[in-house]
Image (cartoon, rainbow, N blue to C red; front, side, top):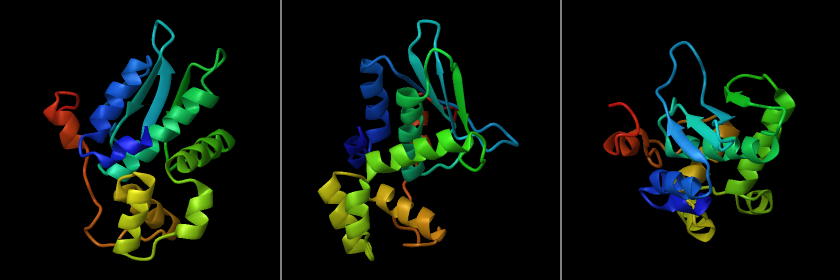
Length: 173
């Protein structure tokens, strides 16, 4: 799934891919005065529904949040749990959230690779992205997050995603 990030239409293709497996992906506007990034529930037929707010209109956060929510589907959404609502800035349900974060990070960039191949410049980012068949924004997003330096690489690697969903009528304009 993460390899779909390489395509400019990757988020839409991911939505179609998940639908083939009975997982619904919906996008909703950010709810004012919240830090809600995603949620998972089951529909009336028991199929998983992943909702993303696209609060941060960045490609790296789209993929990380999607993988995070898929971790909840795979690991935490069972017969006793109906909902997981994620606020990536909050510390509620810390253990389950850390588990989902770790799963998402590993699914995108395996730790064995990250520990030995952490990029230092644009050429390194692009080479690792090609090797992993990932959008370079995912790699830079992880660097920015880990260093807490969101100015890293300036305006490069800042692809937006809302417009893809708006063009398809899947997100309000």
